[in-house]
Length: 71
Image 1 (cartoon, rainbow, N blue to C red):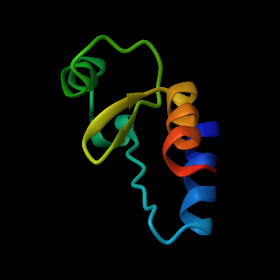
Image 2: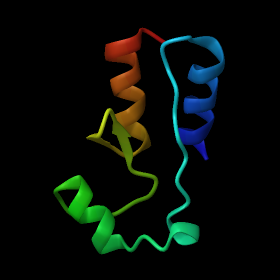
Image 3: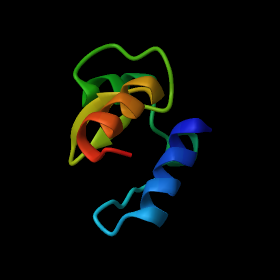
């Protein structure tokens, strides 16, 4: 999973980055639950949140990292 791999890489390389992976199936989270938390319809997983703010999917996360963390 590209998003998880990127998050692990950042976590290993930076002291200011931590992440938590949530398996929606294991946690019993439905697509509707995820959409409610994101505040909009979601079509793909994973969905990334940074400090409780919805970022989006992997492509959005990679762009956020480039813009905010210079990784």
